Length: 225
Ligand code: ADE
Picture (cartoon, rainbow, N blue to C red):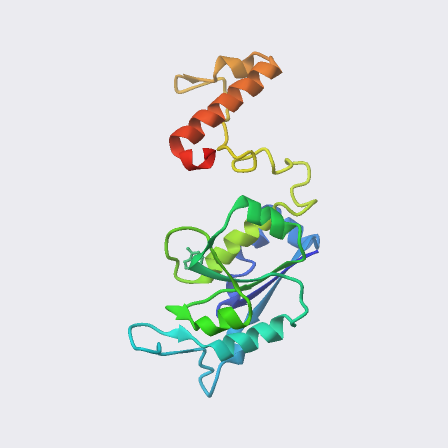
């Protein structure tokens, strides 16, 4: 079973959208689990502080290494085989290939930081893998963690069921997806491409491949390299 453990100041954010639809059904069926750990339980002093001012000065606050390490150690013992991630815009870019690898494993321990940053020493000291979901800055790691889990959970065997294998889509083939159509045959003067109505499966497969290549060339030439 794929076991997710989230370390966060906002445990109410989980499972969030992953409690509904495909992922939610899979959660209810026990195909994956979603445990949250409140970082503040390891905070210091009367106020359970988890952050402090940055060494060297500057704006914002930095999450403390000692607090985060205590939270991590309580959530996952040293022999826990799950990869330990920390969500960060400076992390390595998350990809479909990475989702496939993690989905096939025992699950993930994900640290979701808030504030301006995290003391570098806990990243080194606990061997955290920094992961980014894209070149933009979110207000915290929680929504990024939800994205990672969504991409992984749908690949767990049994989650998609009969819907599809999950591998005919964008990125699994290395190409963006071809255009899709359904009834009605004509809508607002727009028709479905003749090929798709031809019943010639080889011809349809060729058309789809050509469309996927053309769209990829136009929108994401980097994927073809
Ligand atoms: N935290 C803030 N922005 C992020 C991003 N783009 N990816 C992962 N974690 C983040």
